[in-house]
Length: 70
Image (cartoon, rainbow, N blue to C red; front, top):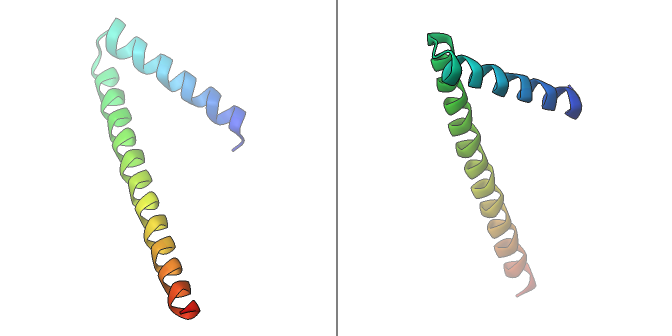
């Protein structure tokens, strides 16, 4: 899926969620808001995991190279 298609889907999802939850106040809108919140939590958790994983790899790589130099 290219970037433009993903952006269009995100905008449509946001508009539908806003209309169904805030304007019409339906149960489907509430479900979409819950789905959005869960997706947000997954993205934040995944981002933190990959950032920590990257820093641990860098730390181990740098420590290994320092030991070889000395």
